[in-house]
Amino acid sequence: MPKGEIVLGCLAPHPPHVVYAENPDQNEPVSEGGWETLRWGYNRLARKLKTIDYDALVIFTPHWQTYIGTHFLGLPEFKSKSVDPVFPNIFRYNYDIKVDVELSEIMREKASEHGIITKMMRNQDFRVDYGTITSCHMLNPDWDKPIVTISSNRNAHYYSAEVMNEQAAALGRACAEAIEESGKKVVLISSHSLSHRHFVTESPLPEDMSREHIYNHSQYVWDMKLVDLMREGKMRELIDILPEFTEQTIAETEAGGLTWMMSAMGFPQYSAEIYGYQSVIGTGNLVAAWDPNAVTREIVL
Amino acid sequence: MEDADILFGIYCPPHPQPLLSPEASEGYAKLRQAYDTCRERIENSDADLIIVYSTTWPSIIGHQIQAHPEPEWVHVDDDFHYLGSMPYKFKMDVDFAECLRDSAKERGLHSRTIAYEGFPIDTGSVVALKLLNPDNRIPACIVSSNMYANRAETIVLGKSIRDALAKQGKKAIAVVVSSLSNRMFTEHIDPTEDRIHSPKDDEWNRKILEFFADGRLEDLSQLSREIHGQIRVQKVVAYKPAWWMAATMGQHNNYQGEVLAYEALHGSGGAVVTLTPSSGSFGDKEFDEDDVEYYHGDRDVLDKGML
Image (cartoon, rainbow over all chains, first blue to last red; front, side):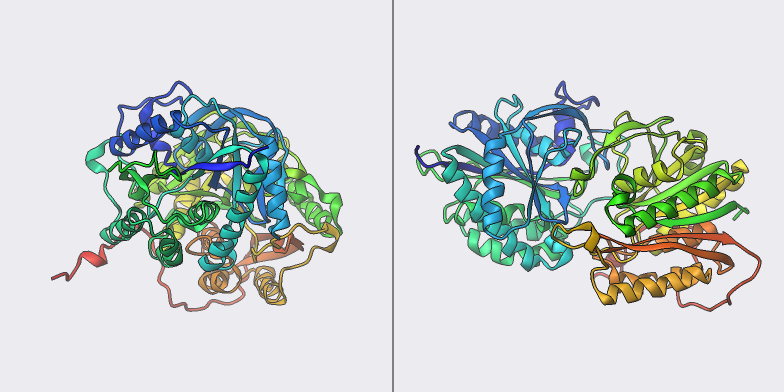
């Protein structure tokens, strides 16, 4: 069996607003659009994904928060409704998800071998988090590939952002080994915003773009610093300053997703493909991808 | 502020073990027994309403109030999914929820009611309501814990609840769902070997329980920031339950306190405590932090005095 490989890594933020704005059949609320810069970037990345041969999407999500180890979805199908606990007015999504349990189990096993506390999640009533659903819907609205969801162990809360970085990197190495062993072609998804300070009020029409802007300028400056490093292909340097970025911007990188993905991909030294940056209710959101294939790698924006 | 009728308050933990696996350890069984005692007291009261403030329902857009008349789902905890599912169907007091929303707005808070089929009621609220009010004999109201809120906002939220109770002339039981120390073990453990994560956490928990037993709720409210720094994992900006409970119950130390159980829940401090208003006071103190009646929002300090 040939070795498995990571064929693409995607930074895919999950504000439910982007699904709401797309008006898919699965989501109950109806919008007049909004957040086009982000959505059109997502749409273009989704088109690229259609041209890539892959077997599964593996997503690391901040909205399945676990404090006792890292958990993996461990049943073949989940079908239910996801209602966002913070924005229920815009996200009530009926999902039907297929899971690559074989890949999930190999990842759990490898992570365990690396000394990471792990658990398979095998409760059929479990509701898949809205981060997973939003990022996966925007990248693959046809839902024609199985996924693996990995929970975010909250090391940043219990220890520090530095410890989070170390443990997420270890998890990334373990997942890379598991993918190689599986013989599968896999797309990794790190599902999160960059800066993550929200406005605490919402306009009467959530998609009123005249109200949308970054929470404050320092958040924007930090976000752009990260985008610059991504463009320059300096992912090791980016991960090294991630603890400070996380602290300064209360960033969603605290969950470990970006560190996990970059570690699994060997800290790329090539330019990231930048698809779009936009604020959503004050938070900074970037759609980006890392394509290991130099032939298909693009300068998008 | 109008006078409100809180019959008694309950402080209880959010973890699912007392509901799903009380037999797994002696400690979990004691917590379950304490919940059962509270349930009996609620049944024997003439309360019109149970108000739940749960630290496991975070909100961002102001303060959310559950207003679906009969929310129904099967809940599974993110960490403890292997303990089983928690099917629920609750009865909410929609009139009160709407009144509370309006009362909160009158005090400057951003608040809204939530009434959506399938809305994910949090583990803490599910555990508390299933154990304290299993037959839905009394309607409930659940309020969120805003992740950005600090002292002023939380105290004003409590006062809004008193306003709403007074407007509707209802007698209520105030339930706070929160751990004491909230650091859990980061590995899976044998429940029979469960213990408080560290002696420091245990000592602080016991000091807090002394205050509860003495009925010194307002003193605890004033100690919130210290408690947050000492024994709370820094997931949110502050330890808010004591602020909410004290403000909702009247901001004083005149309670009869009873600690019904104190046990470890995967390392965190789980206590079931009741506070019943009484006539005697443990003693009044003067505190550094001022009282607040109305929430004015951001003061935009950064925008002032700029060159």
